[in-house]
Image (cartoon, rainbow, N blue to C red; front, side, top):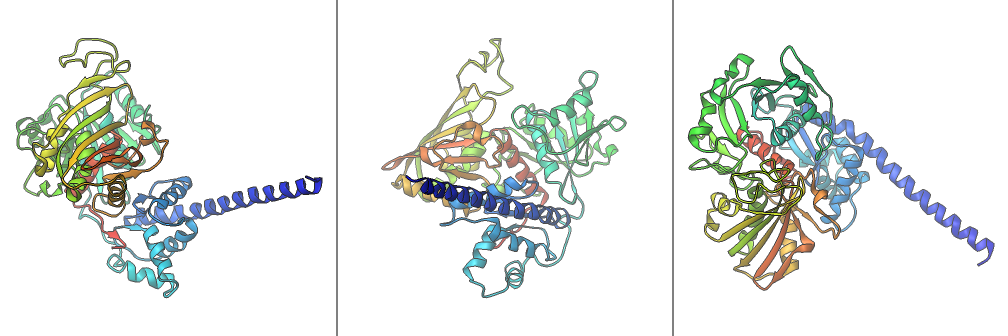
Length: 492
């Protein structure tokens, strides 16, 4: 090749590099312009903006661009901020009532009508049901109390703080713990600020020693010391009609959990563990009908139950389930020992970071409480594995109706994108994902489609789940339902 030819090739490569960078900078600039609009809609109107179910609230420019990239799963082509920015800009000019507004879906609908209407007129038509002016979600914010401030308690606090919005919705007021050593308040604030698995708290945390409170992004969380549920008078702290989330797991039956209701200021109780007896076990999004005004005690079931029940329901609704076995590879928990030591349960006394430990799971039986149609059809077991977070459920099922990998995966993909279970079931088709990729997943479970096996009427599904954060998001969805905070999803 002549020198002239080589210089021409280099020039073409440089032009391509420049074009890629300019395109990225253009996308980045539009995403930066979107941030204040997203924030204002959320703070002033309690409007949550999304792109095909991915929330854009409290995100970064990179998060916005990644949410648009996710839309490739649904669309034949790309969806970029070039498409959605004009939509969001026009949405920001409307006087909206609280809602979840998907600017990705709106952008695709707008493109489909090929300029028949100006964007402002198009949005007034599409968003007419919520273009009714700003209204409060509740007559007054609903107080939330955390009983226990361990791993789940602190993650619940993070999510509730993030969802504070204009302050008219859920209001975290207190966390009840046993008094620790000197410096107790500062230590608990530090644990909320820093997490070895989930990273730094997104915001600013200070402490108010006079009120014995943690101030997180302007939310005052009073730390109350007590040894028993009935010992606390919450009304003396201005807490009334509160929903209490017991994340200690110490009391699981109606008598034990009901002790919280003896405390002044508490109206309803949620247990972050499987309930015993006749306590309703709720998997948010699946059996919300169990949440009634008359009932005061509820269980949010277990992380594994929340991960598998939505997928089992979806599969049973379409293909029917004859029988099956659920095996979980579950991250070790605080119940296990760091080094070999006595434990009342079999095998759990052995070092958690050094061993795979076969143990029992009640998830298969718990499925029947959420899906009575599967009663007696499933067995289950668990293997605790040496990872601190993210677990894997393997569903080995016999179906009434035969399927193929393509039909089963295609169905579950559609369920994850366009169904009432959109918040519960996520879907991935990456050949490279591993457990750590799902830290921070807000879904109850993520179907790993490339691991799916189908042979006639038998299938094996692999479902990843963040057994800490994803489960905590499910608990908060349950609280939102109890408080009457379900936002209408637009476009309809």
